[in-house]
Length: 290
Image 1: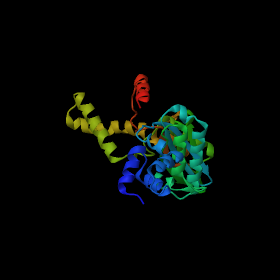
Image 2 (image 1 turned 45 degrees about the vertical axis):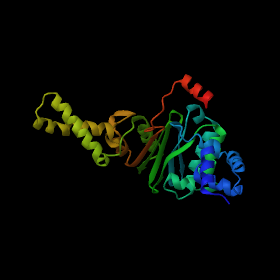
Image 3 (image 1 turned 180 degrees about the vertical axis):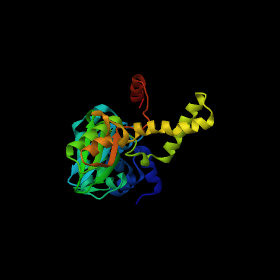
Image 4 (image 1 turned 90 degrees about the horizontal axis):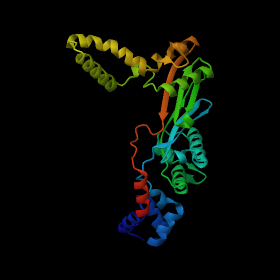
């Protein structure tokens, strides 16, 4: 009905993925022009052309349902779209769908079918409609025990999201901890959870700092342990000064309320994504020439 070269040609003309091109050619019995129209009608051709763009804005959302909770991040190209009602509605819908399905990663989540459409199809359609690249970046799903409590917090309109689990505390205590996590961005829950490579890098930096102060190597080695304690107090949730009462650490605050810390997650929109810097004049000229 059609050849591999037809798929290649359709891909070059539309920028759509190979699988979508095959579907289009199958649907149109190998007719190239009709296949192009099929992709355009589905919004795939338009959406595919946006794949090379960088989506580093967006929204974090937390949803809780009984003993399950999810924190996720969906990205857009501009902050303007991140505030768009349709975009916000889609992100909340996505969180709800993920809570209802047993999925562990984004790839699996995109395959979820709802009303005859996959999440991937819905994402493509939204990208085509809004006119910006929309990217479902990540999520973490958490399950708690009955004696545990979820605490969640969204900061700056969803630019930062946090989700914590405490044990034997009230919801208010858990929420206070989640607010602290959003504001103070701890690296991990406790010093035992600090990644070894991060610890080693910190040791090396501290040792160099001390030796640059003129201390001999053997003295520098002894001083590393002391200065590492400062690193732990800045990086570990349990040891950070509690944002609402600096006379307490977060661990002490939770303990004073009869509980303990179990887990924490913090997402910041666009963290780790390299943003493309481009001046406005260049962008306008690119659109004119494109």
